[in-house]
Length: 134
Image (tube, rainbow, N blue to C red; front, side, top):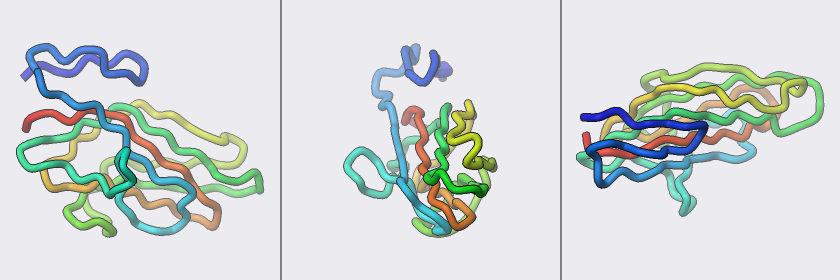
């Protein structure tokens, strides 16, 4: 299978793949809950049967101007609200406001993209990638 071509945060071309779908999943103003990210419709995003999802870009925003720090983790799991296979760990503070790490994370069919922010202040989380045949 050919690798996706990523330019900035846009999936521009996937040679040899006709049914690729760009994925944007998010969770706004969350604090200490382990929860699945939502798709465009607001539903918990789960990788469909026979597919896999590749994530290339993340966004983590600190949802307050007060002093503090928030850590966050991205997990892959077959459960909506449980930690599982750790894919990414990072931290953001009010002095950074937001970070946009470029990453490579794979999620298998049946997995949810689950995030876990820690700390008392809300974190906005989003990921951008592509869903392709497994």
